[in-house]
Image (cartoon, rainbow, N blue to C red; front, side, top):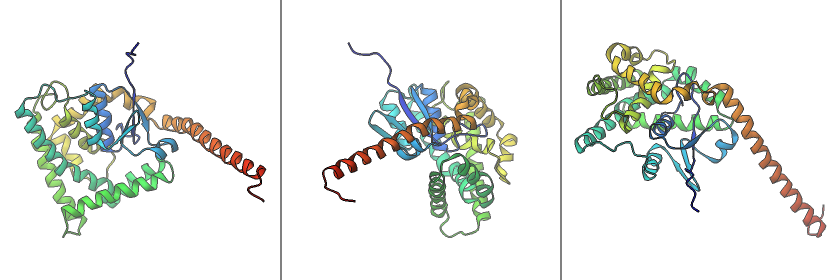
Length: 295
């Protein structure tokens, strides 16, 4: 008889803090999509040797299939019939693509710059957090990789500009235009197109919420959000309350639970090490008994 049991998947993400479910925007996107679409998946934190060794973030495990990055994971969600765009007409789809492109090219670069290129915020806020809550040496690898991605992005956007302040001003201007357009589009509605969030809502939330929640230092746009775009701040709070509140409050995303998951996974990791050493010991004993090896 065929089983009616719903398959359960695994989503591997960077841990969260400061009211964010993750400090990685792509991980936020995956978590939020999964919650809105009700994808049955276990969320594993990238704070243990087991997850760090075998997976990157974000990654989605479906049996033997492993998808990496939000774009591929979203495609996998849709192939599994977890689609958030049902009900949108062609005009709305076109508008969604245009607004998503604007967010990706105007809001995302400023967040990347503030988190990974701006020296003060990177060294005082971001790096210390990742060094503390990711395992060695994966914390170093993650920081190095993410920083390089951000540097490559900024250099591609500003190939002939070396002044961080000038770059920051240009990025802030672009992000301001982006947020103004988004605020006008949202208006008094709860979400941008439908009565439930779509992919655009997820994208906007993932790059807007960090500005509201992370303790950035001397970032002009942080103070502008509440004054100029209060409906966008309310939008973030609405998403939190309806879809992420329990995840933010649950110990899964608390420092205590990160430690607990590390300890649980260390048991499995230790078991792997013990089994490996035991197997090697048996092989060496066998070889010595057969006189293939003399010590």
